[in-house]
Length: 138
Image 1 (tube, one colour):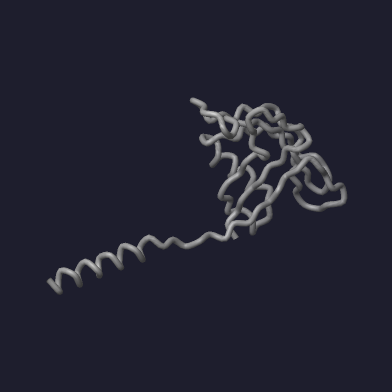
Image 2: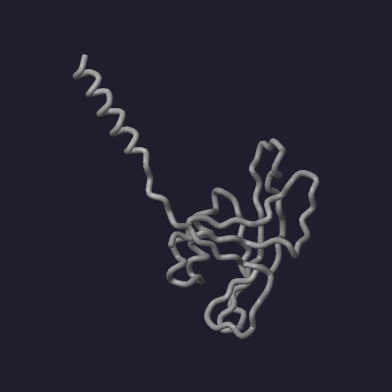
């Protein structure tokens, strides 16, 4: 009986400690609709939200939806490109790879990228209130 109890406690302790995961230190970069003309290097600017068909909070939807945005890339205050990006689960890896090209070296381990604010039922979001938030592992 003692051996059984000891074996059970040993297995329990091992399984409990095996569940601990390393906590990732995630920092965020925010892409807004403002541009700083005196900034050097790459700068990402949210030019426009083309569409936002994401399922609002508090509503049950068949499809999660997606948001489309035009992002302008500037280098040393000169326009390099305008890129239309579709934010959905299937495009997440591709989007993160594109963002990583223009972020600082320490910000390139991108965990996620999303359009904010998230839609809510019966609430209209003004176009000027949208922004993109990119989470990266520090």
